[in-house]
Length: 195
Image (cartoon, rainbow, N blue to C red; front, side):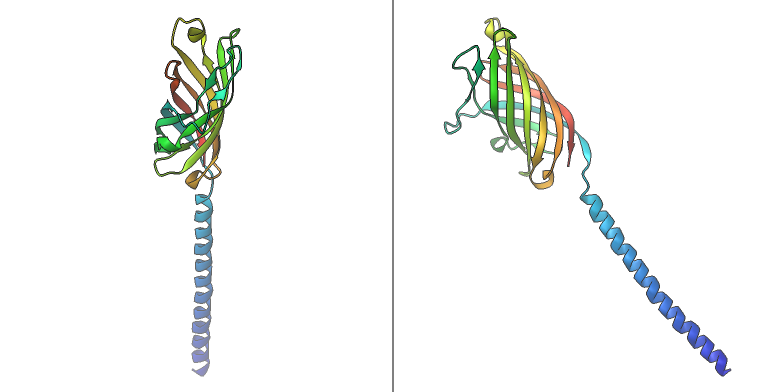
């Protein structure tokens, strides 16, 4: 009977030790699961990007228009603010959604205004997306004095951002009308963003 009592005590003792080991394994699994969830939250995901935007001229005298090279001396493009809506951004904060031509060239031969641009888009919560791009503007109507409008097409590359867009990348194409009298344009954009 004494041996049976020792055997039962040993089984109970081993069982309680086994429970502690199992508890450690479960706790370790939960910790590793939490780490996996946290790692997945930090993973970059590529998503579709769409926008419907229009510009207004930035008249700030501290930021002069970009002088264009090419066939029309004195021609310059002002900076601009962007207004409208974009996926992942909501309604843009226009006062912080700005762009500026880095270079521009107007050619009578091709009847094209080509530009390189740089700027940022401000989400409704203030997070920013930075972009650079290249645009081609059909200026044939303007140069032949048959129209005051043209079309803009281009590709803009996402080069980073702030907040949830920190480290963002991607690109989107733009396509829309340009008004040479007001110096404004509007476009639909489609592409992808990774953040």
